Each structure stands twice: as structure tokens, then as C-alpha cells.
Length: 218
Image (cartoon, rainbow, N blue to C red):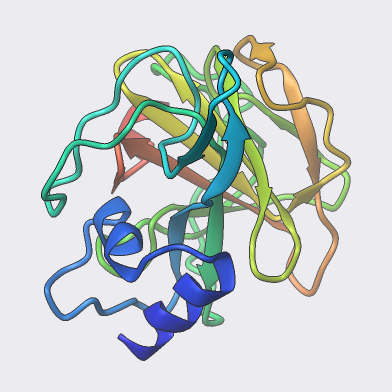
């Protein structure tokens, strides 16, 4: 809980709101390696000129469901989200290389081996090995809902798709899109960032819940 309080203070949001967004349990525990969606409270002006403080979901245009732990519905979508990574190094889990093209509902955003697999409660996405500078492409058509940064000031791209699905792309740089852009399947969003381990962190979220990306890619 102490870590959650620290993150909440860092982004100037309530602990309860942060917990609701990420479906955290009553103990408010945050796992190592977990990516958190963080509602960033911003003072904005409405079209009528009335100040509005909003803590909302990524994207705009269609309502999103209330997370299971939320006591009240979320307000209309007005602000961006940030994803804070609480990451612990993990030993690579080698898998077969991904295919350049996919007949699944989504396409692989990069081509390479899966070096870290999805594990509910441990890792909210998959790590796909790819050389620095590799094009990171949209897994499916959608709208860029947010471009934000994690606690290490590294960019994270969130794309909203039909049926309340989100895809999240982390460990990237060289952004090619901005918030609000409509993107097509396979369109370049950014490039893989160079680092101690060259890879793309990729997530699929059904509303606020992380799900295994592979069934959507196969």
C-alpha cells in the first residue's frame, strides 16, 4: 500500500481512484512488474468556459465500463492517462518468433521472439524481442487515446479499439503519432527504444483488465 500512496502522490491523484482504475484488492497491493494505468487529474475548460477537474479513462467518444472495484461510475472522458511501471527484471522466456503477418484479430506490433510471457497477476503484457529502431506498428485500427510517460519519463502509447479494447505499447521512442490520431492496422506508431534489453512491451486490455494478448494475435 505504501508504494501505491507514493505513486498517487507523484501523479496528484487519490489512492482510491488509482486502485479503482487498476482493479486492486482491498489490501491495495501493487505487484512487481505491474503496469498501472494512472488517471492524471487536470484542470481543464469546458466548451462553455466552466473549469473542469477530470479523472477519466483513455480516449474519447464512447463510455467505458466501471471497473469491478469502483463504487461509482467514472465521469465522461476528458483527460489523458499515464502508465507507471513498477518493473523488476525477469529472466527471458524464449518462445517461437512471431510472424510478420497475422490472421488474428490483431497483428503483432513487431516481429521477434516472445522473451517475456503474459502471466495474470505478475506481468500484464508480453515482451517481444526486437532490435532498437524496429518499427512498432498498430496491432489493429483504432484511435490514439493517450501518449504519456512512465515514472522513468519513457513514452507509452495507448490505442483505443472497438469493443472497449485498448492496446498499450511501451519501451518505445521516435513517436510517429499524437493523441487523437486515427491509425490503421500495421501503421507505424514509434520505434523500439534501445536499452539494456531491446524489446517491446505490449499489452491488450479489455476495459481496465489486462488480458493475454496471444489469443488476439493468433
